[in-house]
Length: 251
Length: 311
Image (cartoon, rainbow over all chains, first blue to last red; front, side):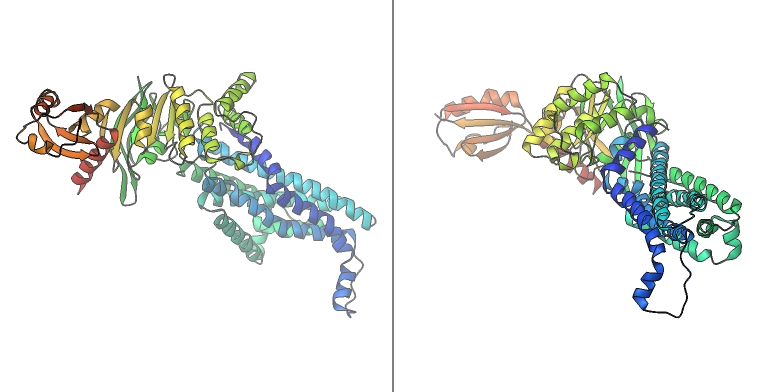
């Protein structure tokens, strides 16, 4: 795994010096800040949009803020992660920036694992900071706030995010363009949502992770062993696939 | 010792055979010109030597290490500059060189000194602009600097001057010339004047095959076409061709402005006989000199010969 540390350093520096910090960091912070506000004022927003409705909506609680945050994490913010992950290998192969480093004592396995580590840790950092912010804003708007549900949900969401990062990186090694890599990864996400309709698949595979995140956020009990175990298995398989494909790739 | 040894190398792209049993060796310490028209297989060979592509047959080694089985060991002793080097546009030149040094496990004050020295050699010292704002020439000079960050024993340059203006070419060739003696340089190009300027050995590649491999001057002499004499008379005399009729050493004659270009079979006889013939006509001789065959002549002849054989 020669060259792992230099590539990891380069990935971190690149994240903070390019658009990535604004897109990933910005999106996480933005949704983290506005989600509790949206939860607090959902009733007022609906009333002002549709006028008086016969439907009586209950007063929102902090659990609505957690539910809103978990939905955005599992949908919009996951797409932001796919955009970044899709370009990790395909983008560098297309631009030719990996050619000169790869003619030095740098292992291709090291490149894949360093990129995965860098993106995963930066996503974790973004999730922790933005969940901290959403917690603070929620405390400002709601009473008797319990923190455990949202942090448990974010923990499980991170496993889901790691699975998507690994899968998208594998696709990014397989196909020659960032756009194609994103398209395939997005299609995988959509397929996961469709398969989630089938109860046995949801219960015994990583497909159930998305629903588990929203259930944990609203303080419901969820059976996590199979979804989490299969997700870790998938992460390992996707990473091995990425490494094997990238090692054979002609540049 | 041999720096690069290639034997029976084959590379197939679907129906196109890019390398066809290519074999050659590069002596250590030489500046080796790897010459060929576009599509001859130069870059494919280099990509295989560097572990960026796989061969479909044959073997290749750099400094005795097989590039197909131990590319990491090869990489530790080699420097490489592609024809159009791509850098991380957000990095500065000094950061890129430090990044390259770290890939070799180099760090500390010695590396800082090496980076400073290379920045100075490349004329990039104190340049704080990110690489994305560099001109092509600046990028190419930085490319040479990153290629020698590890003081490589073998330096592989893939058409390093093809995309540059005359000043950029001049700078890069000077950088290459400065490395002569300390490093084996494998220099791929189709710019013949660059080869004549810096290379002491040349391999000519056509359709994936080596068609000639010689010292530069031997190649020029052997394949540079017929020997030529340049003759200038004191006054213009259109009757020179008639005066030379029947001379067995003569194979051709052409007017080149003020002078005559004479193709000869036997240079010594021509140089001996010609002044007498001119004097016998009552003409004055201003200049008589042999014209050295150019590498371009040799290259054109070799490629035409190869194309003729292929068709």
